[in-house]
Length: 249
Image (cartoon, rainbow, N blue to C red; front, side):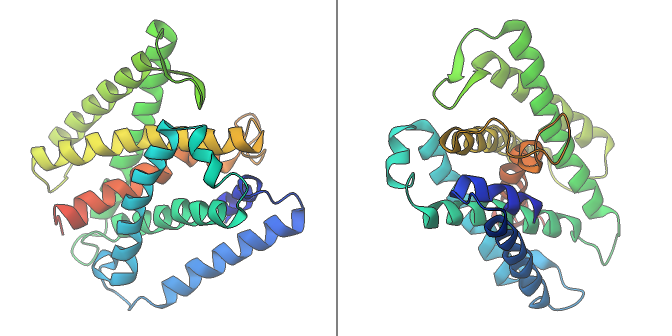
């Protein structure tokens, strides 16, 4: 709901009341979806959850095209509040359900199985972000997407992938993740790439809105979206690949 509050700026809502209503409606949407789920069932098997995750996979392919062809790509949505709201829904709602589906993984047999998966994807994304920052500061020379985020470099991007690969290997060796090495590596690589895309996509929307931070809810760090932008893409993409594409149920 806080992310929806901040997304109101991207959609062009300037008044406080409009953004409050957007946050409330987002919360109601999630609550209604939760109440449609039967009790004690693996969420990802249900069509309202799997459908949202598949929609997220499609959205992030579209977002990739929007980032690659920016600023020309913004011509068809720049002046449309409806399109920007749809983009927000496709960013925030699947992120919520990706977190829920991972947390409920084999919950009936092991209450902590899903917690390990959540911990893994968070460490993977945080590692990729930290690695990209460190390698970018040390070796960064070639701009990754100068029209969207001038501070990001190809050196940082590759450094982030390397860091996420190390984290993936460590978790594969030491953590109780019931999945083959090949599937884990495939899902993790795509999730790490998606995390970069999530960051770039938020930067694109902030650039269009003419703001530096998505908000000021976290003093010294910006807004909620500034902290979860990478996760909003990585979590649903990882969950969709792991549980639906490769069928790790």
